[in-house]
Image 1 (spheres, rainbow, N blue to C red):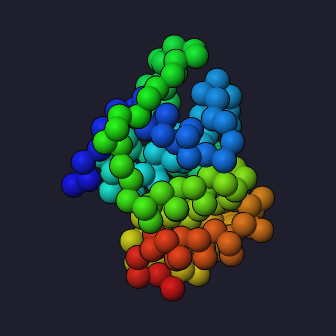
Image 2 (image 1 turned 180 degrees about the vertical axis):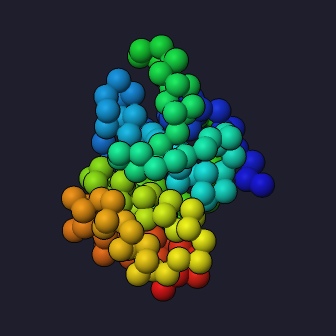
Length: 158
């Protein structure tokens, strides 16, 4: 188990710090990126909470998580504890993902979600399923799939 202080405030602060652009919790984009970042951290093995994600209009989404960050006061700031350490390879993954546009982030987490919820599905099956539910993001599939493979986020799919 990875030893870090994974309170929601620390997670949101950390995601904001590693993001290539400011994450404002009062905006759709800030909340969207928080959802996707926490999804990624969860699947990288970090104890981010008992959040259950299901497929939603903009990719995997957790209503309980949304309710928690809506409860934060406007303008709240958080300071990650000094022991908030992320494996360097995971930090690279998060930074790379967050340096891209929201559509790319939606693509990688949705591709990953499809694989995780359809055990045994082939890479081609994942991609076809993705395109059938998110045709507007088809241009991101090749880059998104390559990202997941490069970061070992796909198991047994080629």
